[in-house]
Length: 156
Image (cartoon, rainbow, N blue to C red):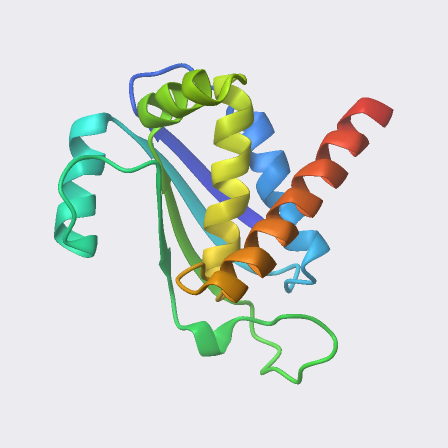
C-alpha cells in the first residue's frame, strides 16, 4: 500500500500513527495492496478554502475526502477487478479543527486525527452518512476499525 503524507498545517502531529491507522483501515477493508492514497494535513485557512470550494460550506471542516474514480477501487477478493492498482484519492485533515473537536469530546487530539483518517478512508471507499442507515453502518465500521487498530498497538 503506497500512502504519502504531507504535513503543511504548521502543527506537529505524529504522521507515523496517521499512516499506520490508514494502512490498517485499508488492509482490513481488503483494499488492493498496490493501491495509492495521499493524506494532506493543512492549516485552518486552507481547509476553509477547500470546504467552500468543494462542499459549498463556510468555515473550516475537520476532514475532506476526494475519491478518484470509484470504479477503480478494488474492494477485495469477492469482486473482480482489472488487477491494476487503485488510486484511492486524497484525505485532507485539519489538525487545528481536530484539536478543538477533541477538546470538546474529552479525548486527545491524536485520537481525533486517527478517527478522522479512518472516516476519510471510508469515504474514499464509497461509504457515506447522509442517510440514518448509512450513518449507522459507516460509524459502526469506523469504530470497529479504530478499536482493532488500537488493540493491535497495545499488543505490539
